[in-house]
Length: 151
Image 1: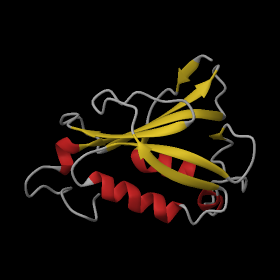
Image 2 (image 1 turned 90 degrees about the vertical axis):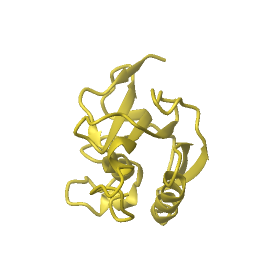
Image 3 (image 1 turned 135 degrees about the vertical axis):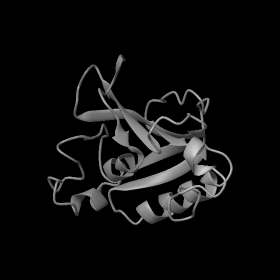
């Protein structure tokens, strides 16, 4: 299966919105089917379980587990946090799951990026996703983003 990366990247929190089925349904931009603008996970039914690969370090694993518990209130999708398959620096995708990575990606102007992958250039059915959390900002001593609320 050929994987086509999405052009452009979303802020990191958008992946959680895209993944959270019914939570997305509550948003005005949703079409009420658990998708955002028609974009949704390629799946056979609802509810479904989506593995979230933990490729994070430091304070991030606890935040990732907390976010998964909160999104698991959905009746469309369940998140199962599992060991990651990616090198955090490169944050490679794994079909059928989200790989969440944290690393020092540099002073690039972004705190987090989400990248969606589609099968055969089908721009509606997500087959994989990655989320990168930029520790270059989050780990700065006395930095603006080195807070519980920012994470």
